[in-house]
Length: 212
Ligand code: ADP
Ligand code: MG
Image 1 (cartoon, rainbow, N blue to C red):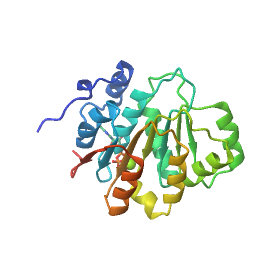
Image 2 (tube, protein in one colour):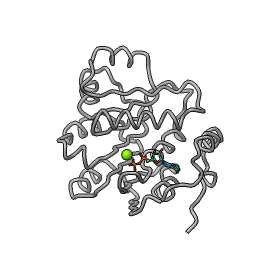
Image 3 (cartoon, rainbow, N blue to C red):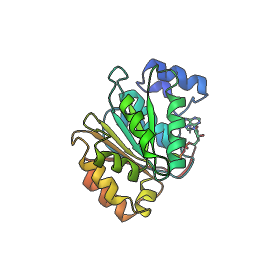
């Protein structure tokens, strides 16, 4: 079965050019099945195992939606660990290479709090972080989510396994109601179903078995 090319999507020309230079030509199944709805602004639940290309699925949706001229925090990506947050930020920076002056900030636990406040004062378009530390910034008032229009939970099953549900709920409560929410997970246990019903609006479900 032949796979669709990224060029069949209505992505910004600079994103398509960059994908070409990265050697990303065809979409993986989860990208092919989720990106059209993500780009339309729908809430999407994506289930696929490691290596299926989930980061570029939500990352391209994020970059397509982002208005770089508005220097406000527009997207928040939550990940279970600092290592995963760093990997996501790295992949986002690769995908965003052709977008000038884009600011992606990571906010993770296990790193000093003070310098993060300084970075937040300088501003950002995108935050990638772990739920505990992001919640702490929200509570202390050092992170303002009032301009957020896209919330992404990556590896949601692991975040719930690690006990981050209260932090996630708190972050969601501090986010605008009118937003797009994407949830990616390797598995889909009942507690994922429950949180998705609380925080998402009529989500499209995409499930893929294979990586290519
Ligand atoms: P997941 O989050 O589903 O485990 P990743 O997003 O980390 O998977 O992607 C796995 C690898 O595949 C990464 O190295 C990424 O750069 C690469 N990749 C993702 N999508 C494509 C694509 N369409 N074409 C080529 N490589 C891709
Ligand atoms: Mg991943």
